[in-house]
Amino acid sequence: MHAVLLHPYSIDSDDAVFASASPGGPMKVAARHRASIKDTARHPMQDTAWRATRGAAQATRDCVRGARRALMALAAFGAASLTCSAYADELTGTLKKIHDDGVVVLGVREASIPFSYFDGKGTVGYSQTIALQIVDEIKKTLGMPQLKVREITVTSSNRTPMLLNNQIDLECGSTTHTVERENLAAFSNSFFQYAVRMIARKNSGITDFQDLAGKAVVTTAGTSDERLLRRLNTDKHLNMRITSARDHPEAFGALKDDRAVAFVMDEPIVYGFKATDPRPDDFVVTGTPLGYEVYACMFRKGDEPFRSLVNGVIARGQTSGEAERLYKQWFTQPIPPHGINLNFPLSEQNRALFAHPNDRALD
Image (cartoon, rainbow, N blue to C red):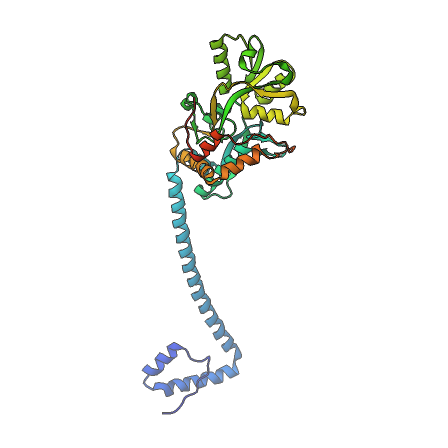
């Protein structure tokens, strides 16, 4: 057997097969390759062309592999897209609207201190913080971390129509949950319980509601307080001259301008106006409560998935201790924009509410 030395670039797997099968065997093939060596030495361009051919073949194989990987990726993407599409098809109600629109619209208040109000930079407050916690949960549920948030200012009079007309998706401000309102909208777990009282000038001599007989009194239009006040006026024959202002600031302005002797409203709201007034000591919050009520977030009726999401956020906050911390932040500590402290400690009623979350109206 003779050893045959072959040029490293002159033989490939096809030549090896030919060598074993040819009549002349390896020697005949070797002779052919010796001629190739001579030709390569005389014509270096032939070696370059061979290298180019080999490179093209490798590029083709790489392209095929890349195409296979791309197809696999596209298949995976398609499966994910189909999954997302299928999930989107399963959405209903408010979650579907938010998903399809790419934005959640919050109804916010201008001056419901400290629940939802404008501090000169944006909307802040106890209720607004809860609303934003709900927004975070919506983002997680929909898998939309970049979901846009739009705010629309609402009043006591227009908040329900705006909800029913799909102009807002959720309203967490100072909206009372009443049995009557359940005919139009749905309400979340309650997040605040309070008494209905009044604010008057300290030197007015007014201490309770019977002192309002025959006098001008103001409240805010579209509120449960307005209904309670008018019922009291009829039942007790007090002959009050009741004015319903467009919003809370307008109502408090009527009291300050002496166009009314008292402003009847939710206790925390009137405490907020007293605390933020330049002359807080001129006013007093007084009166035997006309009743006890609760605040809740409001959303459209017949939407169980959205109700479950909203109530889950509120209940977890209340039972974890987060709600109490949030309460202290907004009712017992300085709040923006001027660092006023409402000094309104957590009541036993609210402590009980936090321990046992529920969505029951109190009327």
